[in-house]
Amino acid sequence: MIHPLLSIQARTQNLILKYFRYTHYGRYMAKIRNTHLGESCFIIGNGPSLTVEDLDTLHRKGIDTFAVNRIYQIFSQTEWRPTYYVSTDHVMIRDKLDEVNKIPAKVKFIPLQNRYYLGIRVKGAKHFFRNDRREKDQPEGFSLDCTDQVNIRGTVTIACMQLAMHLGYKYIYLLGIDHNFDKIITADGEIIIDPSVKNYFVEGYDDDVASEVTHDLGNTTRAYYDVRRFINKTDVKIYNATRKTKLEAFEHVTFEEALEQIEARQR
Image (cartoon, rainbow, N blue to C red):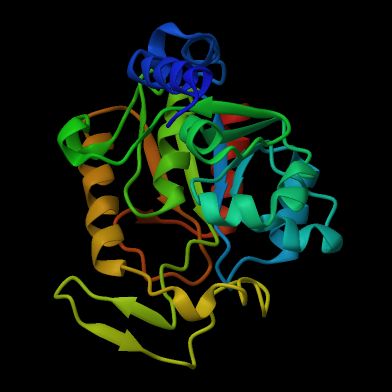
């Protein structure tokens, strides 16, 4: 039998999740909306094309960045640290909580469900409502107002895009989004294994779970094209500045061109 106090706690948590916008969590998300209106940022992926030199450049130029998951594994090689940290991977957060707690980001965006349902408490976390139900998606599965929810579409990068747009960033650049892995599921449902493909910027990045992971590239590719259709209706621009990438959903620019564009807007 469930203890009465636990039952009350569970009902309270479910109500908070249901009416997220009206809670102190939702009010925080409303407060930070458009605080970077018209600005530029980079979303940093953990692909093998990511270099310390590029991160050092972003650090030196003071450009805002979003980073994800096990990015802390590169910290020993660079003074760069992310402005914002995002993870939707509850298993990784649970297993690497000490490392995540030490990330000195301005804000760590973590799903509230991780705290309520899994008991995972991340230091410095600000929580959003994680939506995994496609029938509750906004158009194209993309939320422009994260006061309500952030739609999860198979890759944390898309959560970063929603949060970046919520914060008001108008020019969003991708870096380290190689969009290629050694084990993938294609759009046709075919499983392709290519041991020659390197997955991440460092060997052993996820050795603890690598044998269990097959990346559904068919699903995430569709999601990226959904994002493109959505942003084409707005004045926001997303560019792919990844040095080596198979993601074709967004206009390609070189890393150097991205920096030139940002500097030109600041003049």
